[in-house]
Image (cartoon, rainbow, N blue to C red):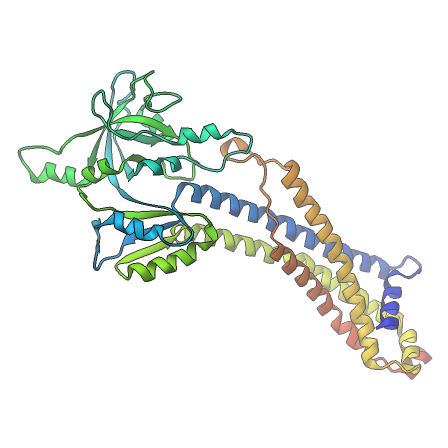
Length: 444
């Protein structure tokens, strides 16, 4: 390969007059570099958005959820022995916490109490009853490293019955609280004594049904004190509230039963393994879903956008590859005498073909290397210094476009660029190998 590589390199980088061939070759190299750089930057930004959305969703949702699917132990009204199921789940590897929960829809009727507001109208919300340890996940999400650890305490709320009036606590989303005119018990620390929170009444579906089925005796009123308000992105449903696990069982008439079992893992990447182990352990009476299953349509759309954008940007490299074909065909025409001389000196058609294939690979290597350097540098600068801010950043949780470089993406981009450049050199190499020595030397 020594002399073949030297000849291929001389055709590209040798001293020669500034000509149309050199211009087309340079444009081809620049096109490959821009295509590779664009792919790296765009895919890195899409990976950054994917990681950010995943982090936000997972921070507010369980990693694995177990719900009844009918059969033994499960029904549409929940399943029995939830605590024993939680103990079985905690024995599995990578399971950090496992706690049952009760969830259902209820009608919220605000009532002014003390300093709290009210009268904002009624609203149907999704109510979830959680254990005290699970209240740390209410409204939690990715925090900046600059924030101290004490801010995590703001995500913990006291949902138990108060000693003053015996009202249990409820936590609502900030926009829903504003719409209904609700005020929390304390502006900074839930459960404080600075201000009495708004009171709301919750009517579950079974309670409302009693209104129409029982003439004497309306539904039992369950009043709750607003103990806290949490923030969440605008993409989330505003109609979700949290109450204590026991209060939710009484509200939805699910004594001794739970709607589902929520699991938090030490490593999110092992969610599928935990799902398989739980499914084998619990049987067909339960449905086990991972964080990806719960938001599968959203993740699939994001992946489709990523690979769709990759296919479109790959066209830049394809156009550059066509330029490579044109420039190399012009080199073949220009160097016919040299090719004939090489063959007359004993070079085979295979050697000539390798010379021009090597030339295509050199163009691809230079363009791909320059594109990798440019794309990775831009991704690093964006990640480090946030050079490109997001438009209307006040509406998002981030101020600049997120970036996450995947080594596999870099390898695939480089391989695709090199492959297209090598493919573009096949036809010119075959034409060069077919040159007849005698006719080429004679200039025919």
